[in-house]
Length: 71
Length: 310
Image 1 (cartoon, one colour):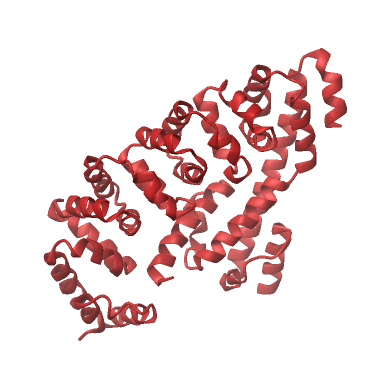
Image 2 (tube, helix red, strand yellow):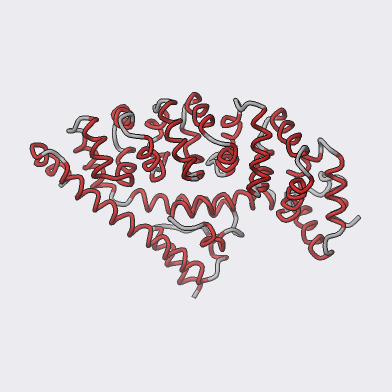
């Protein structure tokens, strides 16, 4: 059970997690994984929204060249 | 690292992790007992995940922004990108251009961006910002209580910018920022030009805010002169405040830190010894075992003897 929770944390980090975190209870490991997942999602959405808003503010003449670079 | 030093660093790491994840530090209290090095590695891992996501599209957006004049980029930053996207882009722009853009931004927005920035990814930009701009942004960050953010920046600032930042911090902010500094070797740099009179202010701020853990941690990193000034200020406090120092020492087992004050006044040692002797034997034995493990018991002199129950 604890190994599962530790693996879930590793998955959120996309790589190794510090071994010392194995001392945490499974519910705390899960809480930590959830907090990282929430922060990642919040950030991805905020960045995507900001990108959309940015294009709308760029002068019409430059919008084409900028869109071609951003893709 | 001693148990006490690890506890202090661990506590600072939890504050930084909470800031990074947008949580209240209390929500991560379960992390505090873990080794500080593991918490630091965890924070580095989370930072990588958060700041490296969307790297490709951000790099393209940074490239596109080169087509725009700095003034327009600054306007876009505020009206469209917002602080999060601006912070990610800041580290990807040519530093000279980023400094030019930053100079056109109002301090409140700069403070917003600073809160979202990983300074390691924008070191050249931060090092090139004018002291005036740094002072203005610092004043904003102080007003918001963004101590972790300020602590992450100090190592990247020029000396004149550090001096400007310190002049914009009140005594409490200095204490809180010093506690969460990314690199404790920077404490001397942060406080090197501090007027001696501010030592009393910092100690007063610790007494008023119940920040003795932070103040005791600070003592270890000061020059002999600054330590003497701070210890004198602590010893000049009213008795109730001094009692607060002793309680923090005992609760967190900050024996080495206590010696830094006690070396200036024997009565502090005597009061601590009396408190230790009044402690429940089980708790005192556990504290003595930890001090022995750290190899500190002999070094602590009469305090060590009181801990060991001799």
